Image (tube, rainbow, N blue to C red):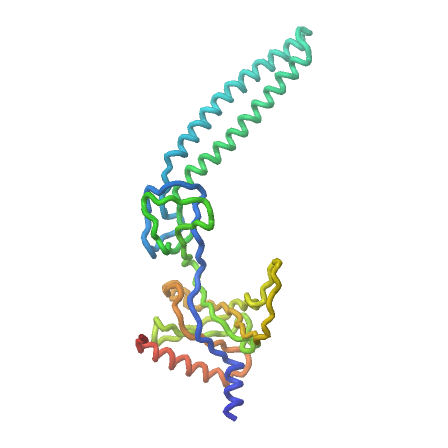
Amino acid sequence: MIASIVFAWYTFAPISSDARVSRYIIPIVPNVKGRLVDVSVTHLQRVNKGDTLYQIDPVPYPHKVDELMAKIEQQSAEHELNRVNLERARELVAKKAASQYEQDIWEAKYAASTAAIAATEATLENALWQLNETTVRAPANGFPANVWLRPGSYVTTMPVASALAFVFTDSSDILTSFSQSAIRRIKPGDAVEVVFTKVPGRVFSGKVVHIGEATAESQLQASATLNPISGTPLRAHWPVMVKLDDEALAAELPQGAGGRLAVYTDAGAPFHIISKVVLRMSAWTGYLTAP
């Protein structure tokens, strides 16, 4: 009898003890390289989208802009000269005083100078964009982590050499995992309750939003090395993503805050009470300080 109750409990209201707050983290990679002249943020400082994170020395970039603007002026003068000569050649050809070949030459020069100006203007736009990109800004609301940059540090455009991580706070999800047997009845939309060690005495509600039915243990990649088969039973868990109803609380919880989570499936409602009791006991024992 007791075994049947436990089996039904684990089936209809499974509990996971590895729930944690998860957020998107991206490496901040500048679009231009250079030496830093200013770092505007500190570790874990809250910033809004568009706020300055750090400033790359802009000195080399205005020189390129000035050079291209001067080049456009020169090309514009040549373009005007080609236009005048083309009109003159057309008049002479109309009067039978010049050959069609001469007119064709000036038409080609005029078209070439038009294209040259367009190409230089495109290069100028890119130079202006690079100048603007010397100011590296926050891509969203959030905070930078691992801020070890200082004025004088050199940053590059290589993704593998990112010197700063940025944590998004616009969305905060709860990530947990269940065994492949416990997850059979879980589906998006199922009710969830979560308790966090950091917030003892409280139980928070939410819903399942996604089930990641894939694991790294079964991932195949193109390789000349054969995949080993050990014969060891596969006990991989599948990830489950949950969104709390209280989004304000989710935004306040720190990255990685852990707790316990119960999913209430659409069957076996009488057994849900067991998980509810267990979670509330966990919420109150959260007041105890672990070493």
